[in-house]
Length: 325
Image 1: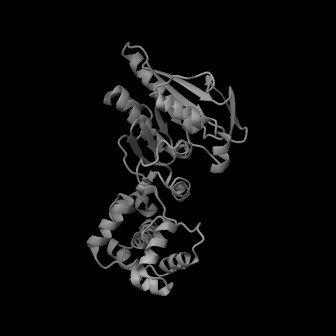
Image 2: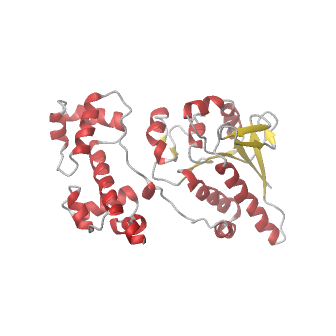
Image 3: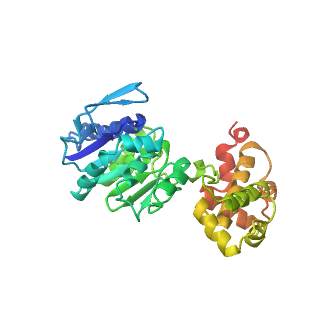
């Protein structure tokens, strides 16, 4: 039997504790239906025997505490809520415990913003990690040594797993169920809990908001110019002249401040504007393309799909209320 530990951090999001618990115990029900013994022992483990969540609205009674549980096979780190820095301080005692369990052979899986607690261990420095796209700028700032892959739903490296934003943690739990129990068990749970299995990207859900939480005024000026003039053809050289920097200096400082190259930033601003048009108007794809400053149909479609994971037509079908109606 595989021992699964679901952490109960202070300030955790209740759904990302209860959701995995239900899925994993659902696997045991699947095995019982075939006359087989349970495959998972699932325990809730906290810093204390009781942990209040959502400002005291809920209280979780844990099965164990980190002071009394030493051996486990998989530790699930749920999403944490509120001010991230406060949450990390409140849950700091989990960090050495997680490091010790990993060194002893336990696997680790973070769900959504649980990646911040995982990254605080240092165990994923130099490795890939997913988290909610909303928190990507803050995550990169706090953990520059981690390879954040914002578009990914699931990562799997060296016995450490991470998931993208919000309810995409369900995809990671299904991934783990398939890894431990096989495809049939994962499909059973996907059907019982009505989860879309094999979803690989959170790109279609992402909304681009340029990182401006930095102190480089010249780069902020460059960002504002791009956002106000994205319909025009903007070159890196023109932008460098406008903010009185050399091209090399602009590119270096822009990447450091925004985590995007100048070209990536221009593309993302254009595509975000295109997404809004596709969501809210009946303009055809070519009209939207010209409106955001593209003249090459192939380049527009390729860039759009690279950023969103969908073609412009697929995106409109998914998100335009008039199409849905």
